[in-house]
Image (cartoon, rainbow, N blue to C red; front, side, top):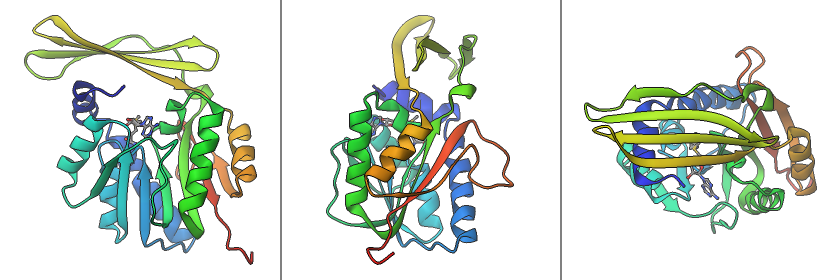
Length: 238
Ligand SMILES: C[S@@+](CC[C@H](N)C(=O)[O-])C[C@H]1O[C@@H](n2cnc3c(N)ncnc32)[C@H](O)[C@@H]1O
């Protein structure tokens, strides 16, 4: 998944708008709630945009992603950053972080709930007491079969996309890249819709307090196409 070519399309097609919007909302949420993290880890960081935003806001931010292609682009977008190729279902860094994020429906890339639970257990282990885990989830109501969409990516490269729902909880994004009219790549990004209620119960079972699970991060920001979840690791005396 996330081949080198697809990562380039992701970076240049304009998908970076999502971590940009998420970053803005998150910084406002932190400010309004008097939360001042010093260190942050962005899981499934993709092209490094959110890390760059968090660093610009004064945090020491690091990112990790399963895809070599995404991490290579993250280094290009954010040469001062710290990036690692790893799998978030097994990732347990030695350092503790005040804030852990995971955006762009990255959790929906994990089909098995057992693996989602493993991610939560891992995050709980390296989140500092009092720290926050903020992530998003696809909102089932916002995902439907779409008409195919095509665009010229460069003079010789044409890109084709289509979102489909092959089964009740499944979402496929098919991407085809044509070079001078010849199909050069077809990639299917497979996602699974998880029930936000079940995800919140799982967070609680892993020790978190769920602070927010809503289709907007800020009451006055308008509703998004995803669920926003904020979970906190309480101090042991709370
Ligand atoms: C839709 S992209 C989102 C990237 C970025 N967070 C953003 O908001 O733009 C999903 C990302 O999840 C990553 N990913 C999928 N499974 C992963 C795993 N098990 N561990 C770490 N990263 C993973 C992919 O490589 C991809 O970069």
